[in-house]
Every structure is written in C-alpha cells, then in structure tokens.
Amino acid sequence: MSQNRSAAVMQQRHEALDSLDDFPTPPWATRALCEQLVARGHPLHLQHVWEPACNRLHMVRPLGEYFDRVHATDVHDYGDPRQDGVIDFLIDWGADAPDVDWVITNPPFRLAADFIRHALRFARVGVAVFVRSAFVEGQGRYVELFRDRPEAIVMPFVERVALWKGVLLDPDIKVWRDGRESNPTSATAYSWLVWTHGSEVSEHCRIAPCRQRLTRPGDYPPVPDHLKAPEGSLL
Image (cartoon, rainbow, N blue to C red; front, side, top):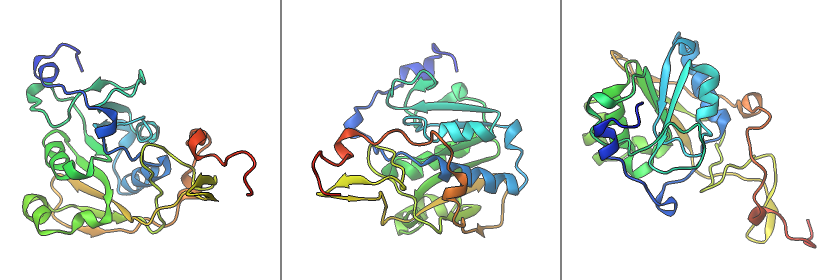
C-alpha cells in the first residue's frame, strides 16, 4: 500500500500502547484455523490476507506459512519493519484498501463487530476473527451483526487457548505470578468465527486438541523478567 495515498494517510491514528486491547494470539491457534480452511478447499497458498490488528506479528508469521501474501497493519507502531502500516483499520478506505482475499485477525473485543462488518467490505473470499466464545451471545450483537450477516462457520477450541495481556507465553513453560510458579492458562473459551461470501449454510466445527502438533520452534519469546521466579524462591 502506498505511503502517500490521501484517504489512508489523512485518517491514520496512532494509539497509545496502554490503551490497546493487547492479547497476543498463540501461533498454533492461527495454524488451526488455516488447516480448517485448507481442508475445506480454500487455496490459501494462492491468496492474499490482511491482518489489520497485527500487534507483534504473532498471527502474521503463521499466516505467512499458508498464504501467498500477508498485509500487516495496526493502529500502533510495534517497531517491526515487517509491519506494513500504522493505521486505523476502521477508517473510510475508499479505493485505498489493500486488494485481499481474506481478512483474518484477533480484533479489539469492544470493536470486533465493527471490524467484521468493515472487513466484509474488502475481503473477496471471507473474514475470520479470533474471539471469546461468548461473543456470539447478546441481543446487541445479534441486531448489529448476526441477524443480517450470520457467520458461515463457528469453530470453538476444545482445549483452552492461553492469552495473557501484553505478552505471549508458552503454556508448557512455568511462570511466576501471585507468589507462586504455575503454567500459563486461561479460564476463557475462544473460537474462530468465519464468514464467507455466498455461504448460506452455517456450520459448527469444534477444533480438536492440536496445540502440541501445531506448535513450532521459535513460536514463543523468552519469559519476561517480571514473570520469572525470584532468586532464592522455593520452586
């Protein structure tokens, strides 16, 4: 995308890091989605995808294993040169929107419905969002989204996907929190919701346990110092 296109440049908005809904997505969870799409006959290796809430590229990297091209943007600059732009996805893009087949993202929860509706305007094939499973509930979201644009596929994870604010943690590596050592986990259930243009049938497909199979070397950064056990602690 050109750096000087007027609509995109004039409407870009930089966001303070502490105001972001910063919950990085484990790479294995993105691979699980891609495998489901490939199994349904989608030729991802020939297609382009846009990740508009790319964060520290934890979703972008596994998407790059399946797609021909990944366009990565975010409202915040995370300092990685592989991020294609620092811009608010919800602007009026006009003719400046990237030419993509899919939009796939973990959107800010409070803006997820807006992200989905906006993404459906640009993605030629479909849209997939990683959300709390409870996102499908609620009268407000039903009226503003699901009533008129129901999802094509609901993919809840059978095993828990561990998301922590501001940091990507390997659930097999213990961290120090609240005075004790434990493995990262989550009480929150997550799902992929998928919309595809032209689909008139809604499918419910559980994602069977696959974390161990879909985890790759280098997926997780080192445990940050503030989550390491203090020296002299009894482990």
